[in-house]
Image (cartoon, rainbow over all chains, first blue to last red; front, side, top):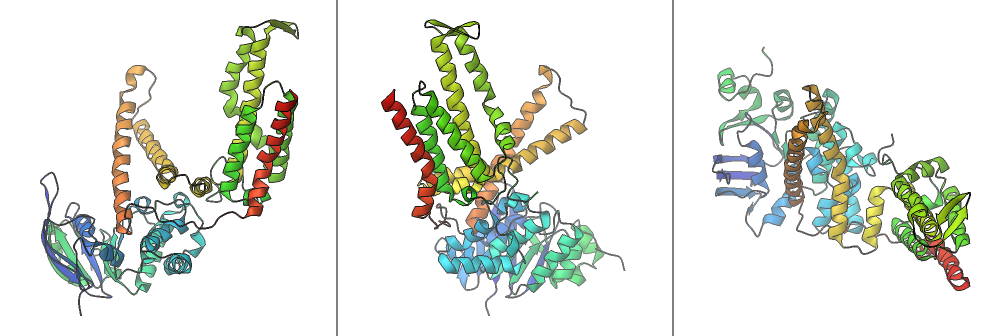
Length: 240
Length: 254
């Protein structure tokens, strides 16, 4: 079985010469939920942007299913890798929620009833069909998160990459999001500083620091290794 | 606040006028204003007829009269200028209410007052019965190039986001004791304008990345396939057609 996403020896240096990724390798299997943890500046968001080719690596390989990222596969890979950005205001750019959710599937060439179905299923998956006619600016934080997720789900991706999905959410919004993510039958790579969230949602976690993966294992195990955590500016979510 | 109805120019109602497709209303308002603009100023009765049509439309669309009047204040700066014209205009003088006024200036004042008020009322009615994204959609259906409607809809989408950012920056400045009174204190304002520009530019890049992520390839997808029926067109164009008839009579009988 091929991985939902596989990354091998990925290197990327910013135009200003600063190294962001210094040989990242890992794989996420279909249906698996994996947390990507690490301090600020570790390269997590940059890595996410490589997974659907918004940024292109200087060296290394990104593969999604049986496809290797390249100019010819870019379109198909963007369909399969659903990237949810950190700030929903960047993700939701159309005048209304319905049009925003339709943007992705319409770019894939859907129209008429097919497009309609994609939009309803995307919004339905996050319980947001009633928000369809609303203006993104007037949604609450939790609603914005869910709609941002719907815009990507409407494209029927094989892996979701979420960048800090809980930032700015109140406890109830966070709880709803956990419920929605748990209900989705799709591989997920979740970048987060919210270690409780990681523990609750993902059985496996990666820790990234200074552009490399420094640990890969069971979330509960990693989060109880105090030395490992403090070395990478993380801390235990609770003390037993 | 019903989200989506929160623009200050929109009046939430369910009238026939609200329900008309936006492109018919946009074209109708544009044509009406054009007809008003080319009507000779001497045909005073014609302007009365236009005003009556607009009054009927106000009643028909259930937009409160007070709402229209309060929005009309926006034309006040132009009107103030026009009020001076009778005193400074050239031409032979006429006596009106004990003042000796320039006849050319008085006609010019009347012309500006009548046309500005009628034109502004038409735009206020358009905005009061059509939500902003709908107006942009209307432009799109009128074959305005997607680049233009795209820019307009991004501007509308992000105007409030950027205004919110600006408000937060001002709060942060005030919180640290900034209370500008003199020109010499303007530096931080200039600096914050620069910061806002850079932030907006960076946001633009992030939004573009988000668009690429969802398969954007340089062309906005056509999401909007509905178009107005002949009936709807006739309904909306009744206003400019009636106005055009009045203008025609005005021109031929003058």
